[in-house]
Image 1 (tube, rainbow, N blue to C red):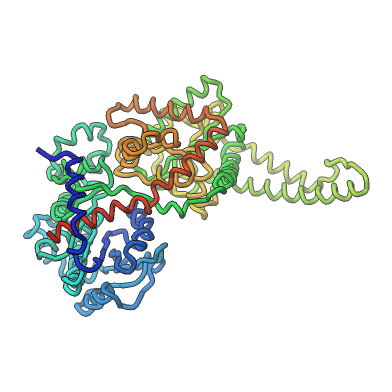
Image 2: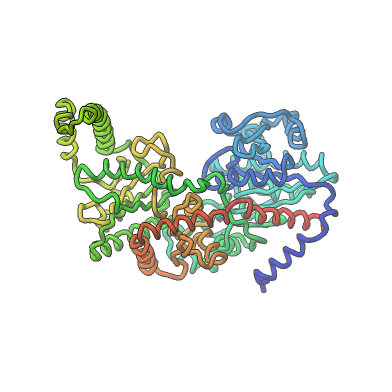
Length: 616
């Protein structure tokens, strides 16, 4: 019978409290991932945001290892002299014929980093594949991602072997690996009796992500699923076997949430030793007493977008308009986009029935294949610029005339002060403005509009931006950035201008989007099937009062969850302005809880446990 979580935790704690003196001098820590200096997904955010906290604890005894990508390295990497234990190990690898780069990652904290050029072992790839199969049962694959992972694993093995040979037994080495792409080195090192400590973190099981997509019974069936069998079904057997071998070979196996821990138990055959919840560098987002001012400032930018998108056809009261959004990878089912749209349709009906004066503009921000920005959206933006130029010119000329008239003791006719040129120019602009078609849902021309799941559900739910719809939807199939002509601001600024983030995911091992939302002082909705939502339920029982809402999805069917989300949205819309300000204050104040200065202690516990298990 498996030990209880409480008993396992007590055992881990007891192991960690063993004498530190037995380990000798202070250890070295090497953290390895495919996303070091190489942004691909969410793990890049984990590593980058955590750096300052790790450097604060470990100093120059901390080093990250990642793949060498010339394009990203040119921006994020700065070479450094080959000194210190990591630099000397790189020097030895270079003499052995490997192509390796050593320097600093140009992020806050500027940590030491080793970048491995996987192409330098391309000639030995067949031998690496054979050893992976013969020693660890990992099958060969024609997938270039698997080939890269195997080459990367071999180079990590070589680097850590050289490092440990120089440092052991003077001081121990801890090697912490993230995800399957970096995992092959773990069973390789264990098979050669490497003297250091090995930690492996999976942020989402590979098979779990495939199984959850479009499968509403995934969690109900999880305990009956065979990970190897399902990996062959989805043609990811090699990747799964690397992940599984790393999980079993590591002295300490971890994941980010209890949601993913269940996947690991059933699909990988090992229950994680502990959880490492993700945090953020909250100081990067902190605006102190200015965050309400920033909300107002960026909300005005969103008002400007609404004017350009909707007002050529009809108007609504911007003072009574709330902005909500969802964002993330385009995983329609996993990210809960289907549930969100259903709840918006129900909210639209409830607000209309209640004769609410509030208009909700909801943004769906994700990346989908598109050809270009919609021509009508660009024309509307150009027209706004024309109105702004005319208004500024009229303001200047009328202002000068008004000043001179007032100084002469007269109250002038303002119509007389306006030049005929600008009067005619404004009339022409207004005529062109009012002849625009009904505001659409899309801001871009999609490559395949007919089969797009978000667009099709919006059509089915008749969320098509009719004038009498209290809920308007804007589907923006690209990420928000300052160079975007429709918004002209960064994603962080966009979020600050909104009132609520909505992320009711069905499959979300952690969930950075709601965490980023609250870090920016914006209330957020998540679900109990996201690691972040589960964390809130367990450790923050009064999370709703702090502006962090958790929609139950684990034991609820789709319609029950949609009704719960609708109710949450309706209550939020019904709040007064003062109540929303109080809620933003509460969210902003509590976000400090998720700073890495608090959450990095879990990493410290994992590393201490790994050192203890090796020193026994």
